[in-house]
Length: 63
Image 1: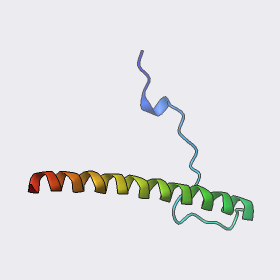
Image 2: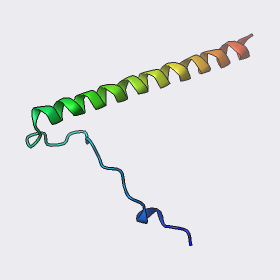
Image 3: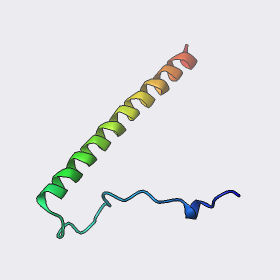
Image 4: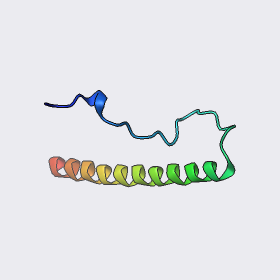
């Protein structure tokens, strides 16, 4: 019997934009900063890859 998506365990949210930070320790905040910086680098790398792909397609069709 197939499982519903609602039955699957949901991943723990590690940070939510705009979240109240008053209850977090300095270590928690630094861990979140590291996590967010790693995610920013991942996004930048993917954007660079997609830009290169788009530029290659544009160059091909303009020839």
